[in-house]
Length: 433
Ligand code: XUL
Ligand code: CO
Image 1 (cartoon, rainbow, N blue to C red):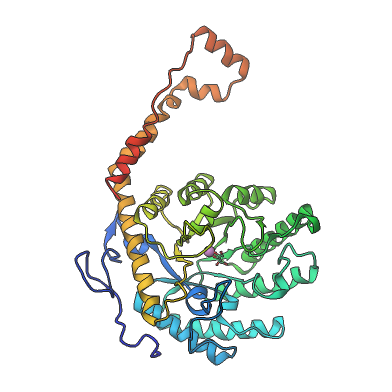
Image 2 (image 1 turned 30 degrees about the vertical axis):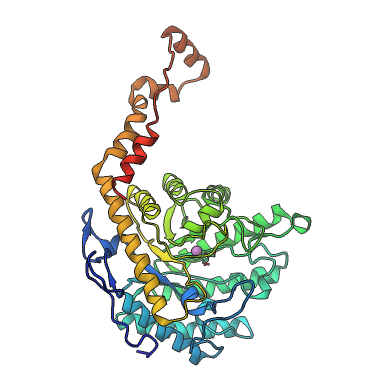
C-alpha cells in the first residue's frame, strides 16, 4: 500500500439516507436486481489513463496535477500501479482497463516497449493475485506517439502499419496473460485530416486486413475474450472511419467480421455522432454486436469530448434499459472512460468522482429494471406491431408487389393512422427515473 490515499476509507454501501461523502447511497454490490447481483450487472471498471496518466492539461494550459508517479522510469510506473490498485481496492471495483502507454515508460524501440510492458504486466499479475480487480479490457495506444500522426493501420507508411501490428500483438499477449475479458480497438487516428492527400479505398483495405489479423491472432493464442471496436465520429481527426455503430457494422460485414467483433459504445462518442447513447446501444443490440460501454458524457454546451463522469440518472437509466433488454452484459461491463476537471487536484477527488458515478449508474440500473419488470413499455411496443403477428402480414413479406396490389384491391385495404403514444410513454418513463 502507498500513502497517496491516506485517511480515505474503503467505500461501503450506507443507503440513501447516509450523509457520508465516502459511502455509496445506491450502489450495493450484493443487492439483487432482476435475480442478479448489482455488481454482476454493472461490472464497473476504472480506467488507467485518465486517472493515473493524464497530467490535467487542456489546449490552453499544461499540467495541473503533481503526482509522485509522474516520470519516465520503471520505478515511477510501479508506483503508479501501486496507487492504482490502492484506488481499485478503496472503490471495490471488480475491473480495470489500460492502454500499454498508460502503464509503462516509452522505450527507444518496439523491443524495449514490450520488455517494459511485460515487466508491468508481472507487477499487475501480483496485485491481481493478491485480491485486486480483474481486467475488463486491454488496448494499445496507437494515437499519442508522433509516429501515429497519420494513423496506425491506415497510415500511408507501411512501417507504421508494421509497428502498430507488432504493438497490438504485444498488447493482446498482455491482455491474454492477465485473463482480460475483452480486447478493445479504438481507431484513435484512423481517419483523415484532408481528403486532398487521402486514398480512402486503400486505407479501408488496410484497416480491414489489420482487424482480420487481430481476429486471427485471437484464435491462434486461444484468447476467449471478445474483440471490441469503439466507434467515434471525429476528434482527433476531422473524420474518423469508425464513425458510429452503423458505419462500423457495414465495415465488419464488408470484411466478414460481423460474427467476430462487437462494439464498445461510449456515451460521449454517440452524442458527437448526432445520436443518443440509447440509440447506439439499441442499434448494436438489434445487430447482435452490443459488447461493452464507456459510461462518460460530454459537456453539452462545449460540444467536445470532455469525458465527464456520468451524473444524470434519467440518461443512464435509458442506457441500462437497452442493456437489460438485450439480456445484460456478457464479457462487457461499465468502464468509466472519464476524467476529473483539471482543478480537481486532491487525491479524494479521484475517489469521490467514482463514488458519484457508480451511484448514478446504480440508480439508473434499478430504474431500468423497474421499467422492464413493470412491462408496460414493452407491452406498448408489442401492441404497436401486433398487426404483423397475423398470418396474412407474415405471408406478405415472402410475397411480391403484384400479389400485394391484388390483395389490397380485393380486400379494399385502407389503413387508418393510429397514435404512437409518444407522450404517454415518456410520462411512464418519468414515473421510474
Ligand atoms: C477516446 C477514447 C479512448 C478509448 C480507448 O475518445 O474513448 O480512451 O476508450 O482507447
Ligand atoms: Co472510450
